[in-house]
Amino acid sequence: MKIEILGTGCPKCEALAKNAEDAVRELGLEAEIAKVTDIVEIADRGVMMTPALSVDGEIKFVGKVATVEDLRRLLTS
Image: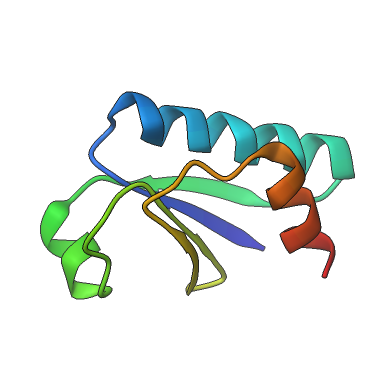
């Protein structure tokens, strides 16, 4: 599984990255978590608000910091 945090590195982006790491750890999943900070690449993916979260290339959250609980539900569905 590949999880990407799309954003410029702002505090909300960092909070989303931490929540994703916590959710993956709590669920015992194997996942690569990467940050995409290039604004052109982010826009090319159709994301106009950050932070955003992508799982295996599919955008799941845009413009909000998903909670650990939100992410656990997403990753187990």
